[in-house]
Length: 131
Ligand SMILES: [Zn+2]
Ligand SMILES: [Zn+2]
Image (cartoon, rainbow, N blue to C red; front, side):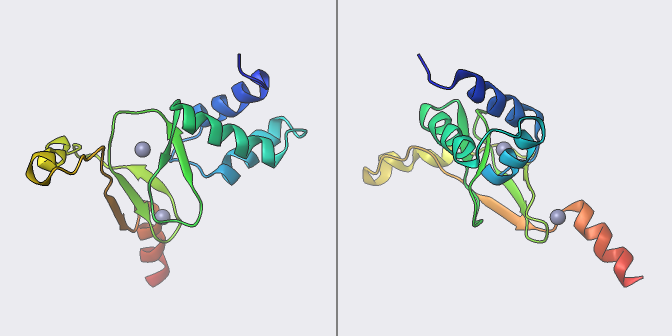
């Protein structure tokens, strides 16, 4: 049985409602609005435990803080270098690229590709500033 089941549910519900792959700090800020007594350490610990157990995933992006999302089939991400938002890329995961195992004996378990650039909102904001 899992400890802290109620706190765990609170954190998991927050992650379900939040989009765009929040960081642990963002999950904490979201949860704290409704549950002011929950500690930052608890939220961070639950996110870590859940990702170790595989119910949520760490999102591999080049950012200073780890992002999280609920378990999903593998997919790529787009990261905005202005506002830091991370969204799912709308093109298919290239599972066949993992077939090179046969070439040199290296066992590939997965891969990640990060696309970075400027999101729609930030591009609009930039345009209106230049006007
Ligand atoms: Zn942006
Ligand atoms: Zn994602």
